[in-house]
Every structure is written in C-alpha cells, then in structure tokens.
Length: 80
Image 1 (tube, rainbow, N blue to C red):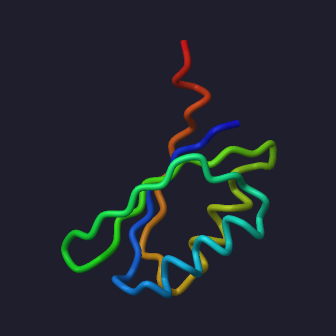
Image 2 (cartoon, rainbow, N blue to C red):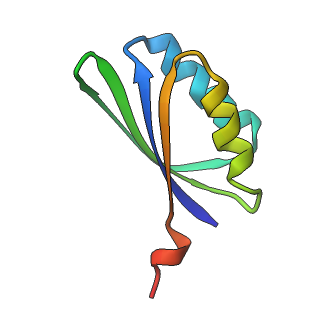
C-alpha cells in the first residue's frame, strides 16, 4: 500500500539522514522524495510503499528528536 507523508524536520543534514535510516530499517520502499527549506526548517514530502502497517513507521519517526511533525495521507484510498 502506498502512503504519502509530510515531515517537518530541524534544519540539519543529520536530521534527514536519521529519518531516512528509520524508513530503511522499518522496511519501507521510498518511491518519491522531495525536500524543501522553509522558515528555517526542512519540509520533506515522500511516498513510501509497503505491506507493513504504516503506524510502524510514523510512530518511530515521531520519536526522533529532529522531527517536529509527521502528517500521513493514504494514497490507496484516492484511487478511483
């Protein structure tokens, strides 16, 4: 199932590396990735694909110190 996430991070390259490592370790395939800087912080929009429950990823991302917010949108439900 595909999921789209929007993540607000601290403006540090280490923060991006940490959260990408979590995505990889949780077994999610990254299919889209976009990084923007706004108001002194990174805004990441990404699409992941996996048969695993998405809460496994979002709960881990929310625990990271560098992550300020995680917003989830299920893309599977948008297909008509």
